[in-house]
Image (cartoon, one colour):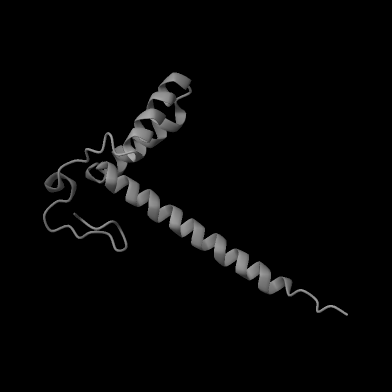
Length: 101
């Protein structure tokens, strides 16, 4: 007779994996904000820009944004804000975030 599966252990392992993936996604989104220089924006402005982006229905506009994003990741358009503008004096970097160059 086969040993029965321990479903509780498997479910716990899957839940842990899902939690780790969500944490990694949030961390990567934060790193993207920093890499783009958007950490220089205040939270209200950044949230408003993201909300507007989600609300836009024009396919041509979204395609233009997609192309600009692809170029950014290919290294063609990486021009984040200067460091002095991105992190005010005395501000501490976020723990676990991208390190400064």
